Amino acid sequence: MDWLASNWRTVIDLAGQHLYLAGVPLVLGLVLSLPLGWAAKRWRGAYPAVVTTSGLLYTIPSLALFIIMPIVLGTKILDPVNVVVAMTIYTVALLARTVADGLMSVPDHVEQAATAMGYRGLRRLVGVELPLAVPVIAAGLRVAAVSNVSIVSVASLVGVSQLGTLLVDGWRRIIWGELVTGIVACLVLALLLDGLILLLAKALTPWRRVAGGTP
Image (cartoon, rainbow, N blue to C red; front, top):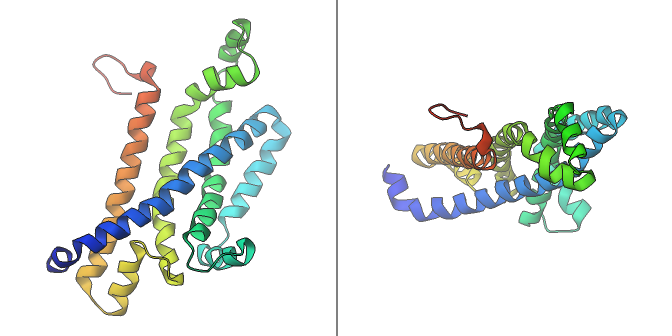
């Protein structure tokens, strides 16, 4: 607690950077995963390819990807863009299948009813299918959010500042207060993102609220 009391401003700054590096890829990954998931649902033959490719992407070691990004993008090794792009790749790897599964979970009779009411193509996707797929997609987002917070901390090994910096520096200099603060801060950040996604999912699915019950 003494270490935190003396360094709380640094912790807040690093937490803000960590949130940016984990949160922005979460949004970008979702945006990119929506058309991939829709394609996998629309053309069932594409589903195995989406699942296999996303699985392979997620097996790439994070440290290796952080090091490769500057070579691919032509950026400096400490540029946060490298982490954002790498984490977006991981997020797409997690969410592409989730989006496809979410869209496939929409009952056929609901799609047929929507079509009969004049909902077709993009209008049906946005107005009917995606809202009904929110619970499944939100579950995948929650996993991706926690995963992103964890993986981003590895970027401290290549010099990118965020909460992982506290872990590396605390371990290197044997400062237990700094090390524990880094661990707890990562945990709190992951819980905050998880809670935010859960609240958004509830707000987007009001029909799932049951009087006197829980979603």
